Image 1 (cartoon, helix red, strand yellow):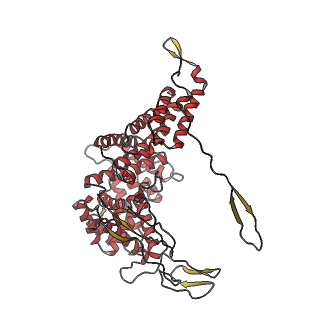
Image 2 (image 1 turned 135 degrees about the horizontal axis):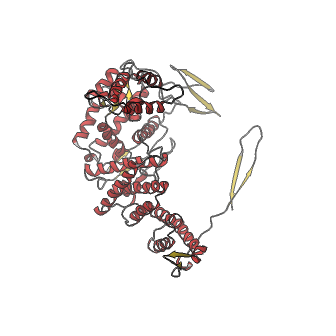
Image 3 (image 1 turned 180 degrees about the vertical axis):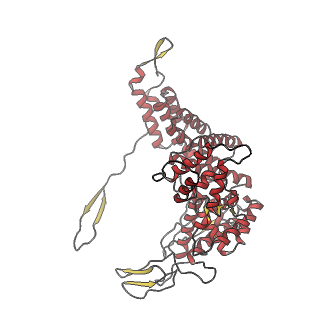
Length: 550
C-alpha cells in the first residue's frame, strides 16, 4: 500500500491514500522500506522574509530597501501575510553569483544526484558513460555550472557568445564558455555547418550589409529577415564556380562565420544524459495526465519540465507547500536495463515532437516517417508481450508508443488521410496490452472515420456491434456515443437508396442489423441543485451567495 500526502497549506497535515501515479517522483524518493520526508522546512513562526531575512514588526505596509526593487509585507484585517521576494538582485562577493542564480544550479544538481544515489532503485538504468558525464558536471566550477544550466533551460540552438548576457554569473562569459567547450558540454563554432541556421544568427543590419558585399540587386528596405536569408541562399546557389575554385556558397558561409565570431551550442550527448535524469525524476508527474499539451511537450520540453520541478522545489523550500510523511515500498524496478529505459526515452521524445507538430499544424515527410517508425516500433512492442497493470502501465514504452500512434491518427486526420488513420486505429484496437483506458476514444474515432469520412456504414455498424458486446469495460459515455451513432445510421434515408455495381444498381440492405442490436445504456439523471443568491451591497461589501440543495 502506498500512502501519500497531498500538498496543503502550512499548519494542516493529513494522510491520504492515493495511487502512486499522482505521487512524487519515484526515482527521487523511493527506497526499500524507509520512511521519507518529502517536505522542506516549515514556514517560520514570525513574519519573516526568507530571502532577505528582514522581519516586519508594525501594522500597515513596510518597505525594505533592495538593489532594484522593494520587498513589502502587508497586513489585511489584522492578519499578517508575507510577500516573499524570490529573485534578489544582490550579488555575493565570491564568484559574482546571487541567491536566485545559485538555487537553479543547486536544484539541478539535486535532481541529478537523487536519480544516481544509492537509494534510488532505478540507478542501474544509467550507463557508466552517462554517470561519468554527471560526475564531470559536478566537478565544474560554480560559474560554469550556472551558465550551463541557463543554456540548458533555453532552446537548444546555436548562440553567439557576444550576445550572451548573464552579469550575475560573470561580466565576461568568454572564458567560461571556452571551459565548457573544452570539457565537451558545449559545441564550438567549428561544428556549425548549416548555412540557414548560421544566417539566422546574424542581425538584419548585418544581413543587409552582406547582401551589399555580395553585389545583390534589388531593394532590401522592406524585406524581412526570412526573405533576406532566402534571397542570399538562392543567390549563392545560382553562381557556379570555375574549375578548382571553391563554391560561392562556401565563400559566403566563411564570411558569415567571420561576422558571427564565437558561437556555442549545448552538446547533444550531455543534453540526452540530463534529459534522462529529469524524465526519471519527474516520471509520475509528467506521465500522470491523460493528454499532452503543447506547453509541456514542446521542442524544449525538458527545459519546461525542469522549470516546473524547480518551482515546486522552491515552494517547498520557502514553506508555501508542505507534504506529509509517507512510506514507499518498492517491490520491483520500473526498467530492467539501460536499453529498456533508452527505448522509453526515445519514445517520449518522439511523442513530444509529434504533439508539437500536430498542434502547430506543421511537418511533412519527417512527421510521416516518424509515424511509420512509431507504428513499426509499436508492432514490435506488441510482439514482445510485455505489459503492466494500473498506474505502472503509463511507465512502459508500449504505453508511450500507443500515445504516439494516437497522435499520428490525429495528424493523418488533419491531413485528410482517413484511410491511414483507420489503419492505425485498427492496429491500436487489435491489442489489449497497452492503452486500455483509451479504447473508448479509439472506437469513437474509428466509427466517425468509417461513417462520416469514408462512408463505410456497413463496416461501422459491425465495429460498433462488436465493441458493445466485447468491450465490457467501456465507459458509459463512450457506449452511449457509439449507440447513438449506430441508431443514426439505421434511421438515415441512405439505406433506402441504391448504389451502382457495374451496369446494375443494387439496393443497400442492412437487414441483419436492427435497433435492438444496439441497446442504449440506462441514463440516470443528475441531481438537481438550485442555487439561491441574495445580493448585499452595503458599505461596498462584497457579494455573497448561499446555495441550498434540494
